[in-house]
Amino acid sequence: RGIFGVHTWIAVKPAGAPAWQRLEVIGWRLYRGGSAVSITSGVPDAYWYGNRPLLLAELRGAAAADAIPRLLDAARRYPYADRYRVWPGPNSNTFVAHVAREAPGLRLDLPANAVGKDYLPLTSAIASAPSGTGAQLSVLGLAGVIVAAEEGIELNLLGLSFGIDIARPALRLPGLGRVGLAKP
Image 1: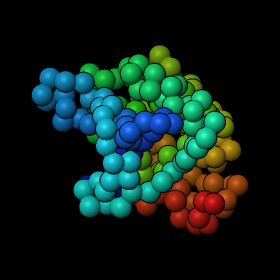
Image 2 (image 1 turned 120 degrees about the vertical axis):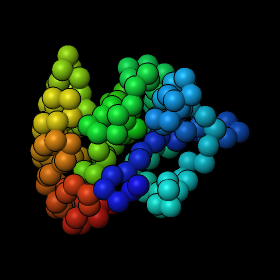
Image 3 (image 1 turned 180 degrees about the vertical axis):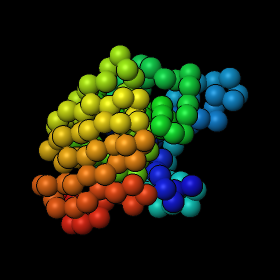
Image 4 (image 1 turned 90 degrees about the horizontal axis):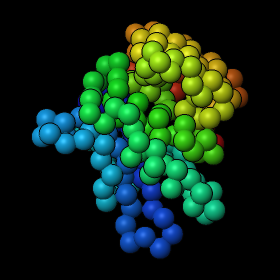
């Protein structure tokens, strides 16, 4: 796990809250008859199967206070809480992309190796990019394109994403993620 893909989640901590909450999808929860969506107290930057966490986006202060209720609401309304499929989705990365679309100020750019991030149902094959800075067309995560300020230009074929980040020159490659200049 983690060699060819990544598991993403969102961590929130409202002002004055005693602990962080992790918003994520965990597929094995379905085997116990529960929802795949998990909204629980948790370490915001835990390792995932031995893989070091990577912070993809961060909001603080007033921007966070504005976004947190929308993120929590989007997590509760996730349309695929009753199903999970590693490839092409819906999965944990589909969940994070869905939730991020509800808080465009987050400007979340999911890495190319976040398999499932491009999953959109046929009824909603056109959507805003997860970052909220452009648009996405996708057919069930099997074929599609994103054109956005944060993501750059990215093609998706059979769940594999290939692209170029123009603003901060880099290639976006399946299995590797971003190769090029680091994001600030």
